[in-house]
Length: 185
Ligand SMILES: N[C@@H](CCC(=O)N[C@@H](CS)C(=O)NCC(=O)O)C(=O)O
Image (cartoon, rainbow, N blue to C red; front, side):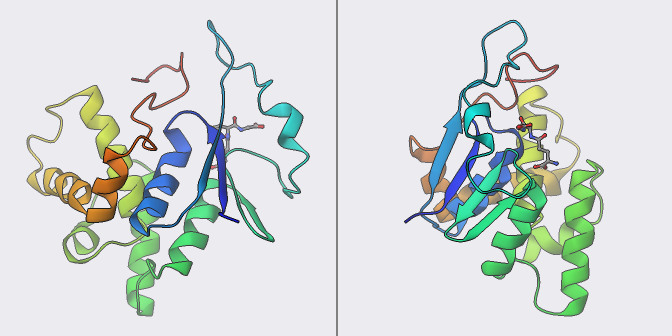
């Protein structure tokens, strides 16, 4: 049975996971839950009845179920998949670099990431691409002064498996975030 990724029908936390799964051509069920209606969208009746029935130790969204392996916490899921697909670096030095960059991306302060982006795809590229894509949707000119970031965004979309995923109906283009959130598109 294909692994299951559970999340709301939005990009947000699950999107880097979806991108990594698409990049590695992992067949998976993208099991989405519907957010409640306006005005606050935070009504969770599509999710709450199943929340405690899946055998998750700490039930939450996103979750990833791969046979007996049941994971919550976005970064734990990303690390699991990155280890499985050898996206964590080869040497201890590279692994440290990957960890530092991955956490840096989550701090939303981007620096010193060229090592990764210019050489090969590793774990931080997935959340970093998603972050850049969100920035570009909010302000299409925001990367004008940072050619290397523009290039990273462009190159990521050109990766054959990513390109295929983005052209397929499986790809969630929007919303980026919870409907009604301070920022979404
Ligand atoms: N630190 C957690 C945060 C998870 C979280 O806050 N999930 C939100 C959506 S972004 C949710 O609606 N969880 C379902 C719930 O609380 O039952 C992670 O990174 O996975």
